[in-house]
Length: 208
Image (cartoon, rainbow, N blue to C red; front, top):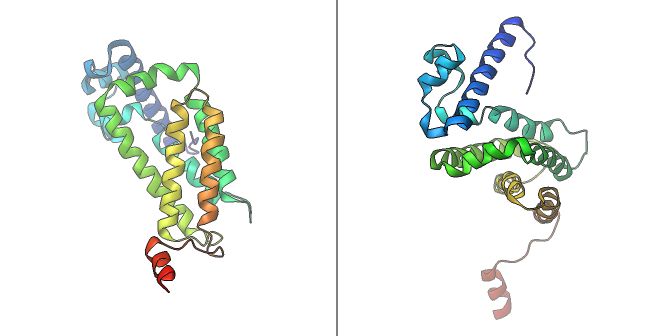
């Protein structure tokens, strides 16, 4: 999580973290559906309006590192050294994120998410948003002359790599395997490479 520099920002960040930690503790102790927003606010000693100024919904309390996750992926693109390859930079970041989320301490949280339709739906929408943000960063990089479609496709692959690896028996090995395929897909989109003819084009060539 990015550490705010100003006193006011640090105070806001501390309040946000307190709310998130309180919510997660209550959810794990009593079950996600059994705990209401007012109970979280009361336990965290904040007003409900204060809670909602930090978190847009109850589901967002569980994914309090959502923005940090998104920023780290974007930074993997924008913070690369000149001429540093994109895919290895993204692979390194995903590997670190997967390592974090598959630690033993995270297991109860993911069980709670997997058992809640509301949390699964929220996570799915969050992944789509992360993919769009990542695609925008890729498309905006002048060193990456890919089409918007290619950028969005690769971004989706990268976000899905995180989810697939998290659920794999050997997460780090899964990241390596998935990114081998992502690297191949990325190379295939390079404008300098010859395009594989579509089925219609091949049929026209055959007729000639």
